Length: 81
Image (cartoon, rainbow, N blue to C red; front, top):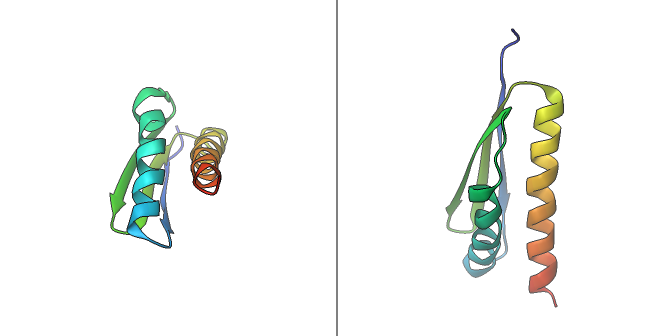
């Protein structure tokens, strides 16, 4: 078995309010979508959101990151409406 792939992404937003709105929007998805091959932690700290992950393979990692980044983009786009 290969070693898991581990890492993190940290995104800084213009204000704490924007970060909080994005976090709360994505948190719902984070808590309800089961991933079998990836473990993720999703945290808010001031103006920053941090996504930490551990995946069993590249494919699982790519799918998980694509999902989170898409959810974040949708949340940001809805703020701009």
